[in-house]
Image: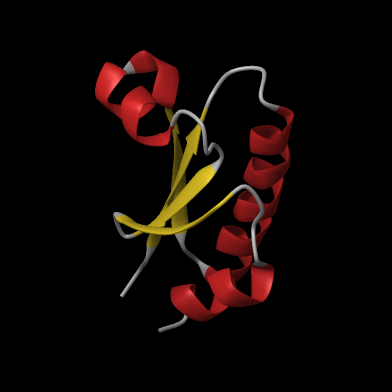
Length: 79
């Protein structure tokens, strides 16, 4: 099964940019796909994630926020 990571992000968010670099590298290593969603583009997403970005979803389920825990993310993507 190929897993998908979604990065809930916003423009001009330094932590989000750092997380994107880490997620891209980890997904490339493991053959997972990933995408970025701008929380400010959708009022519902902004209400849900606005104060916690970056937030990481694995296959649509919230996996973590603020800092990528590499070992934990790798484990989730190899299940």
